[in-house]
Amino acid sequence: MKIFYALALISTPFFASAKPLDLKKVSADSNWIMHMNFDSVRNSEIGIFMEDAFENMPEVQRKVLKVQEKYGIHPMKISSFTMFGTGEKHKGIGILEGGINAEIVSGFAQSKDSIEGSKVGENTIFSSQKGRRPMAFTALENGRMIFGPDRDYVSDGIFFANGLGKGMELHPIHESLTGLLVDPGFLFFANVKNVMEVVEFNEWGRSMADKIDSCGMVIGDQNGELKLVALLKTTSIEVSEPIENMVRGGLAMMEMKAGEDSNTEQILNSYQVTREGKIIRVEVGISNSFLIDRIKKEIKKSV
Image (tube, rainbow, N blue to C red; front, side, top):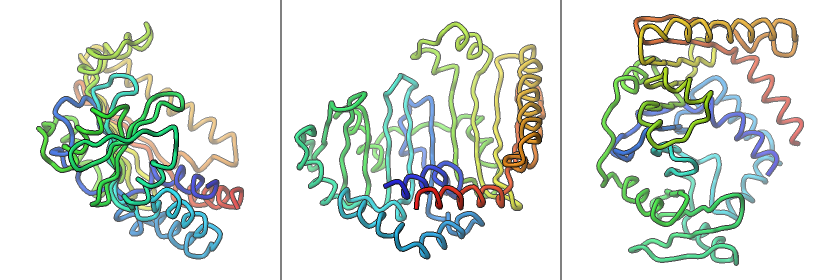
C-alpha cells in the first residue's frame, strides 16, 4: 500500500484533469464543494509520466492489483471524486465514480465484525463506529461508491449521485472559476458567509471569516506549469486591500525561502496577485519538471 499511497497522495489533488462538475449531483444546501476528475489525467505532462511509471513498475502493478482484489477498488480506474457539505464539522457527502467492484466491496465489509450493514431500498449501507469518527458507505452496481458520516447522509448521497435531488445553484464565484483555466483538474468552492451560520470559529478564525464572502480555487496543467488560480471575494472594499497585501506578503516569503533552498527553488515558478473591487485573484505556477522529479524520488522511497 505504501507505493499506492505515495502515487495517490502526490497525484490525486493536483494532476487530475477535470470535466465540468454537474451541480445536479450536489445538494442545494451545500456551502462547499471539492471536485476532482481523473478521466483525462493521461493527457497532461505529469499524467503521461505517471502512467509510464505505473506500466514500467511491476511491483506497483502488483500492489494496485492487491488493493483491487481485497477492497474492490482499482485506484488507476477511478473516474471522479466529489465532496460537498454545509460546513458542519465532519459532516458531508463523498461520491467516488469508476473503478469500483460493488460485489468485492460488499464482501469485504461483511467480513469485518466492526462493520454493520443495513438495507435502504435495493442498496446495503455499511456503517462503522471504529476509528476517530463514525463512517458509512455503500457501493453501487454502476461503479459508484458513496461516503458519509452515517446512514442518512449516504442515503442522500445515493439520491444526488443519480441526479434526483434538488441541485445546487451556480454561485457567481463558482461561475467565474469555471472559466479561469481551459481544462482545470481540481475545483474547490466555499460560500464562507453561509458556512459561518453552521460552524463555530475560534476568535482568530471568525475575525478572518468576517472579512470573506466566498472563495474558490482551480488547478490545472498549463504551459509546462501546474497552474493554481484562486479567487477571494471580500465583504467590503475596505478590507480587500489589507487582505491583498497579506497574500502578497505570504507569497513573497515563500519565494524567498524557496530561493534559499536548492531543493525547492523551482517550486514557485511564477505568481501574480491582482485586485478588482472586492475580488482578489491569485495565480501561482509550479514547474512540471520540478514536480516530476519529486514524484520520482517518492516512488524510489516507496519501492
